[in-house]
Length: 300
Image (cartoon, rainbow, N blue to C red; front, side, top):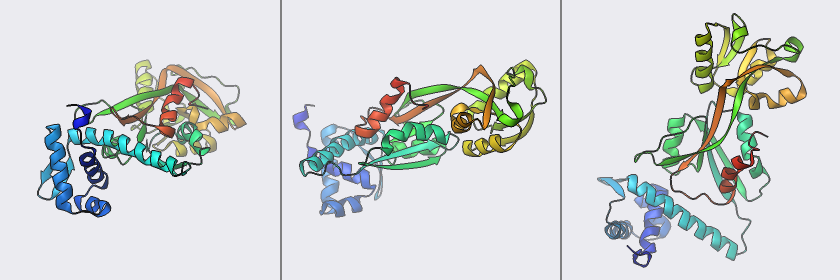
């Protein structure tokens, strides 16, 4: 099929229905009838040779092909709206960047990665947290532009996503400077019976740490296991226990000297990924963020 056979009016109607999630709302926004919108979408499906929705009575839900087509349409018409804004002298109009972040991820890492957007007056930033599964589902429904995660997400026809590696960091052992300054512990050999605070078992860091201790026959004394990295940072600061976490979580406390580095192991690392819809083409602020990993400054 040649590009000159693609009817962009049909594609626009499809885009509005997929964006609104409702034939009724899309028809009201376009100021036409539901039947007219429905007819245009059926003509698009006929031209493409594939259905774009799973239909159950009046309920319409994007199928895998529809999700892919919507990704392309969203880029096409999103850029069109930006072009019209520029022509109208509205280059400074707001651009919304919608970020999902896995709830166990370091808030400091998120801020480090997103910091360039803070200086862009055109950006409205939206950040939500949750489980990786729910965030990816929202990403595929185009309710998010990117998901920050500690693990990559495999792509398949039902989940057409791409996982861009942003960087990795060795996991550290830290403790209060007034208690542990000058101390260096071998990991895991010196940790038997040592009082420790750790990430919860939901976190990949904990899985790695437990496996390392088990293989060495070492059993630290667990004093706290915490799902939220911000809470774990506070525990590291306010207790006398050794805490296992990525240094980015406590970067400010290490810089100020409130906490000190006690030990680390090259076998303990945390990886960071940006999950996007496969074959999408992020533009503007989000595109710049995805390129930052190559510069190596994602942790600063």
